[in-house]
Length: 239
Image (cartoon, rainbow, N blue to C red):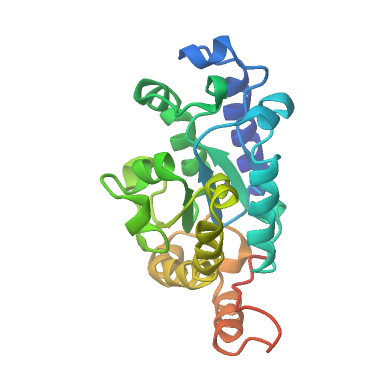
């Protein structure tokens, strides 16, 4: 897909999400929250569900948890508009309760289509419900900071998944916040690992992911990881 084709395809999904009535969550929402970000990105962050601020604005991660996510990204010298951010369910569960299994199932086709369109190299899960979608059976306390291949049935046909605590949990618990900063520091290495795994596929069929999947960009990022400036953390350049 070209940039324009991906953009149009993502907007088609978003339009369907905004008018969706597949589960009970549509009855209490103010606005659905399809997700947003760069259609050419290699990295997709998947949270659990919209909160009050997200429900009001129709955008993901715009409250305090979103502010912390932006801080996490900044440690990598990434911006939120360089990645794609979405959730397992696209409408706010009442009183911010956990999404129910049938609600997650109703929303699953939207997330699957978004991943098919984006073809990310790395999916970063935020929280245990997102973890359950991409690392079934795993416990967040054990899986955070780890990486494994993504099941292609999720829509991400050739990707790795990296597990993190939800930023909201980090806001509540200082130890989890410190752990999350440590986990974030490992994301660039996971991205480079996924790029290396994807190279044979990319050579046969050019990926829809951004130009950073080229050999030159990979080399540049690898050099950055091997010898970062003394005053910053290692990073893998997205664009």
